[in-house]
Length: 316
Image (cartoon, rainbow, N blue to C red; front, side, top):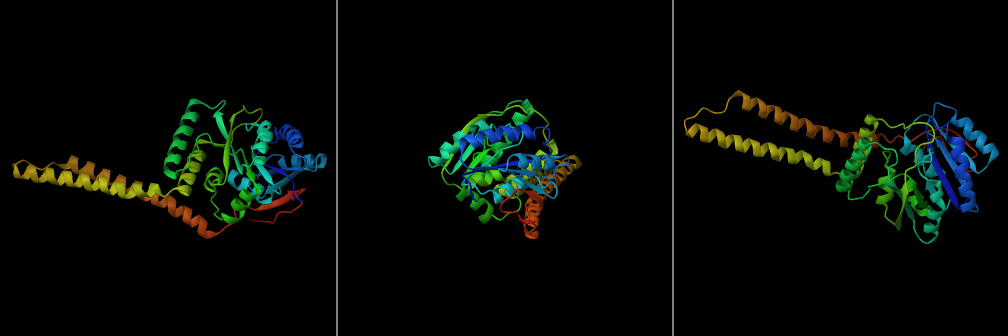
């Protein structure tokens, strides 16, 4: 049966803090809504996440679980939870309580007043280091300029109306998903709720430097084709350099001077080769995205579910 509020929690190796997180979120959800469900999506954890979800469901039937067959990534876990959430309003938040569940009643109030998407926007990034803050600012600035969507301070902490959830899960079929970008792209009535990022009580971050770089490349190429314009721009730069060097060679020849020698030629060739490789790399990123989409593989695979009324299929 549909409920008023669904809460989707993607989680990977969060067993140390999951029981406390579920108790906290359950208490807030029960006070905020007469009918609710909490769906924990285990993204292929290697700890005892399935056992903890099963135990939580035995104590509280409103807590349910989806166990993915392996780690597909947070975007896939979010999609799995949204796909099978039955609520008229669906909240997504992290399992580490860095997204404050205390704001869920405020989000619901905004939704009841007509908002269809409520974005949780970071005011303070908590314990993030200076480098982490700087890289986040650079990434958000670049993404906003390239895509036209301002994601500065954005997070996966959101409330979505049922209509928006249906659009995200039924009308947008791409396998390479970017939840923050898609939820901004769809439009509808959107409002923001500011929050401060709380420190992690247990566990540690699962994102590394290389993973963040891959994530940045994936999201930028998913939402903007402007990087492809760098390729003709690099060609134009090389044309200008070639014209300048050609004019210099002509004037040097007319003046009876020797034409610039090997060093200039070597630098020019290396510069041209670098521009070509950069251009090929940009094109390659988009070709890789096309390759992934053409294969048509499912976003994720489900191993089993716990307490789900609408039992998920094996893939979607």
